[in-house]
Amino acid sequence: MHGVGDVRFFDRVARLYDLAMPPAERGALLDGLSRAERPVEHVLDVGGGSGRAGVTLTAPDRQVTVVDVSGEMLSRARGRGLDCVRGDARTLPVADGAVDAVTVVDAFHHMPDQRAVLANVARVLAPGGAVVIREFDPETLLGRVVERVEDAVGMGSLFTGPDDLARAIERTGLDARVLDRGFGYTVVGVKQDNN
Image (cartoon, rainbow, N blue to C red):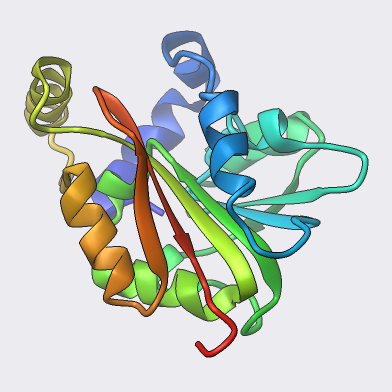
């Protein structure tokens, strides 16, 4: 789900990625999923890389599928027992209305055409389904540090604050709200039956 330069980086660091990254915010993700207006039986973890977030969402009654463009990261996710599909967030290889929820955890800023990504997410969500995006706020001190570090290593990251992200989600026709704020923030969007 990353820009071409970012994919090469993630392919190179896949073996070490989970050692450097903190665990995914399970509570925030589950809070976001609870906003869905339908049972959440199938989650598409877009840009899910090594499955770091996907494993926190697995449950006996829930299928989690990781979608990413980095083959090396997906091999890590497969090693965690997750279903994986290699694909681009701008053209998700999933039928219209096929999933109950989509998560994007610490990856949206790596996606070069964010408008197309959000439109595709809205397309694959079933009515009542929810998208939950966890991101880094570039207006916080730590967010500015992450932004500068990623720029220094040549990533094409595009960071967005929580309010701007909520507005972008609403432009796809979903009802959006900011669930929490800070260095790591959560925005959820729910697809209404009339979409």
